[in-house]
Length: 464
Image 1 (cartoon, rainbow, N blue to C red):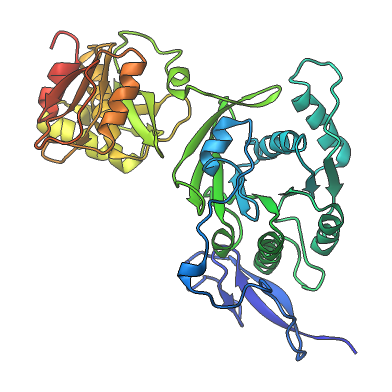
Image 2: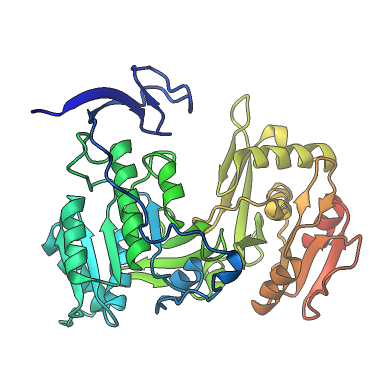
């Protein structure tokens, strides 16, 4: 007797389920995102699912507070983002644009972990020969010499999740990598691989396996054109950690950013450089971002931004040019476009710069994207420096948020920012004036306090 099926429509962006087709999803508002799926309708008693053996209520005082033992990695930047290593029983989702280096990074990790334990790498997108060639290149460090790969690294090309789970139970590895979650499927579901139902159910099944067996699982996820993990947002709620690998494919630097971590700090960032022999960690990213900086060039300023708990020094470049059109252009690369419009308005109204006749371009060097307002002062200084053709002092960093009245406002983690600037040899720091004494600031860098944007530019520009 054939199982009865019913038709439902699922939004591929938010996971909204509807019994009828709609041109626009009523939940997320996206057009043409509702796709048809066939769901098996059964009257049998549902199969028991969940974490068996963990459903007995216990007093909180009876539960031990032992720290989870982590699996350390030799890649310190990856360790930083994970919170100190891989937690057994955790499930980690890694997303990023195609070709950004997700598979390369996790294959490097698998090779290193396989020296101490068994690792299973499951691929649904590449052949075994392709992965073997990449592994030889990564393990040989680009030397061209034949290298012996670890014996405990297993590879399988499979997309059927039931078969993958059988392999896991047979090998009992300590780490499993699924590349990618959008290519895996459960045969019991009639929908195709990559649909909302398949992605959600596959991730849930893998989570149950990880929690019940103490197995660490890494999932590689595709992203949408907006840069978000493809599939329902519930996928990000299922996993313990969500990491994004960011960067421009035409730039060598990659940023591994943590946006969710149940075992460590969120918004932590690791910096890597993509080379022929794989992803190489950058131990001092501030120095790398400033390596090709032109000293005493007009339109260049140094900002100190916080990426998680790490302060990073980045070069902000500004360029003004007489417009050839009726409406001047505003181009922002690495900062929020609306933030640029706000700063241009403040410079025009409070500083008297005639930017209404100028095209304004702002760029953050190195492919880094700065989202916090602490970079406001550096952006404004770079624009004013280009407009006046006067360089910002080469040994000066600028930190501060700018208000609409042209005032400077204090930002957080100021001691850490100043310590990082002093460590890299900067002698001066232009910062907002402190209204109350808090943490002590370092003594090996001169602090130039300013109450307004005008005062800050007088401190920062050469000859002002």
